[in-house]
Length: 451
Ligand code: UTP
Image 1 (cartoon, rainbow, N blue to C red):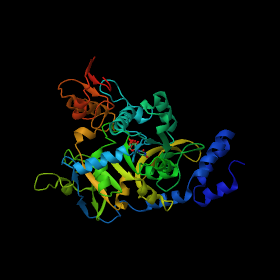
Image 2 (tube, rainbow, N blue to C red):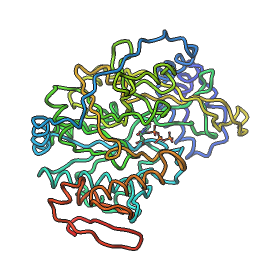
Image 3 (cartoon, helix red, strand yellow):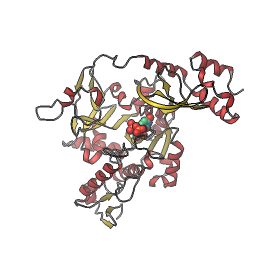
Image 4 (cartoon, rainbow, N blue to C red):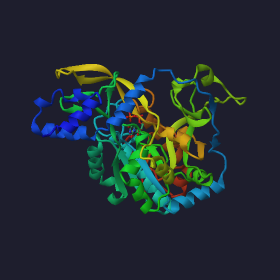
């Protein structure tokens, strides 16, 4: 029997017996699939998530918010730079790209990393990242390993896209894929939602899920076998992220940091970006909406915003720290709830829309658990231009314009649309040192490796 008495009893005891409402209408194959899906649901966790909903919004005490210490990345730091280069050259840094999100704001049909953003060549997000990693291997003389986190909704398509593109020039055995967990969405009463008869409404468990998935998937162990000690964490939507920055690696290593972060100064007080800061004395990310207007606007004697450490979700994370976080078997990061209208079905099987809740953990919540941290401020114009929305701020249009502007500054020209393949050069100095030439091409100027 597909839906065993034991399975039914478990769900009924947890107050979730309604998930079986439509099973009599399922074909045997669909029934078997659904039973397997149900067997994987961690009902104890679902119970804890439902309990989160019982805490009224705003029930938490008003925390004390303070700015955190930030190192200015523009200041000379030769020792750190050298330490970072040595660590990279020794192959101690492994690369972790998180690409398990749903990209719903962009609304692109396919994994977000397959989205084209090259100002001249339509180079995809994945290609930008691969190029930067390959160039780091060439620059520092090591064999890079790249782990890409997907989720169930895009895992197959992501692997296929990498295979079709010959892994963007990386040896296939150096590119690993691993998937984060999915969680059922709940209604406001904590009942598991179905997306159709015999189908749970599942959503990825947030980028905090990376820390658990690294361990659960065995990827952390495989990194250790390759001699990797620190993970360079970055997100799929920012093609300007520099995953192998010797300065960042060096600050991380020399400070004995367990988790380090890059930040950029906020554009203005109203920019809707989270800032790193101390929450009741503990380092974390303060969401835009959690900062009062007064704190948002407060400035130092120099005129800078006091809460100015805009979080760009670029981290160095020690492998030992990830192991420690997973040691108890439960990552224990706080749950964030996202309330959305969700298309589901009622007990009679009719499609309806309800107010539902998705649950996520966030990677930056691990900062407060690290014994030592480093926060490094970098130049937004060089390192941050995410593709989040279909139009307006942080969209393909702004990202292409930023990549072109960066290209112009690398080759020292103004006016044209420019695209510099990250495999060729990341900075103006590197462009000059390598003696690369600029190719004229319809619509602008292109720099390619070896050109
Ligand atoms: P976002 O918070 O921008 O979410 O993710 P998203 O899912 O990509 O986009 P929206 O909100 O639906 O429009 C920031 C980064 O974290 C990854 C994303 O793939 C992106 O690289 N992420 C997010 C995951 O890997 N897993 C998640 O569960 C959530």
